[in-house]
Image (tube, rainbow, N blue to C red; front, side, top):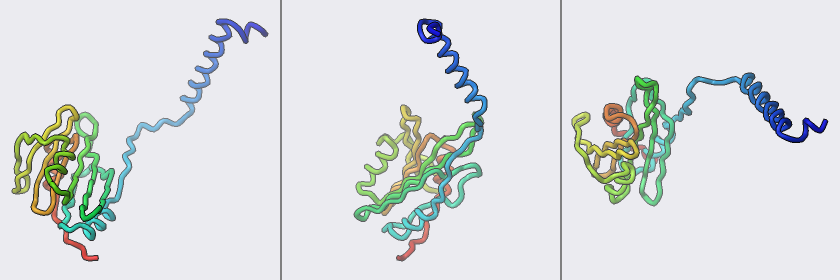
Length: 182
């Protein structure tokens, strides 16, 4: 009895029993290989923002097939209305998704809002999307690309790890929403 409770062989035997138990557990536990991305309905956030914001809200009219809205948060604090709407893009050729986010706000100064969301104040170029000009910004160390548009009453930032093409698609899908009166 002593040989199973003391010494190297007892330790090795106990480890073997533990590893065998873990192996059996892994074999009988169901494993899911399918991707699960939580999807949100952003219509309530959008409706609340359309009522609360002092500006006409911009929202995507239609996003590409395979895009999943993953987050939506609208806030209205001291007259500053902000909306952040996140998407997981469709799977690319490498079978991976990227992330894209629309952020809009009437926060002043507008440049501070844009710089914070883009994680940089450096403009690397401009691009025309849907007939309007957007600033391009890149933060290489975070693999983040951003499109910024300053309007008189609101700042729009489309940002994320998505490609320029995907970000441009999201920016091009934005349509001004009618103001809802409370």
